[in-house]
Length: 152
Image 1 (cartoon, rainbow, N blue to C red):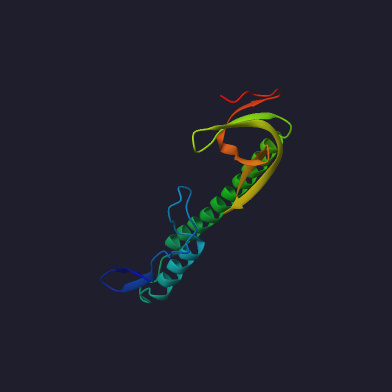
Image 2: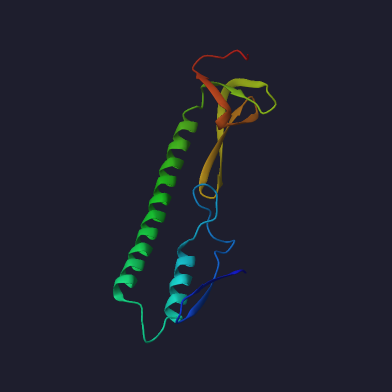
């Protein structure tokens, strides 16, 4: 594991860099999480100069940042759960409807939706609809109708 160093005239601190196990951020990039923040805080407290302890204002500011991080993570979880419920409801509403979907190979697939399957990856629900016995990715649907659709 790589080390991140921070030094001043009175002391030097080495703390672990963000590990590969950190939770991915919204854009899929690595970001610091709660555990990384706690490691940094503990390293800072362990290596502070006893003659110049961290002032209470800085400590309160860091605790406020930690509380804000926790609240943001809880909000992200709630938003993702609401998004999943909406996705499930929308995909389920397609049962009995006719769809037209573009396939990866450039062809189209059309027919009545007879079922919906769901997969969950990292807390994100992704539906696939069953059309003529074939799983069709929900994101490839370009048209929905209550009457049969002719393939283009």
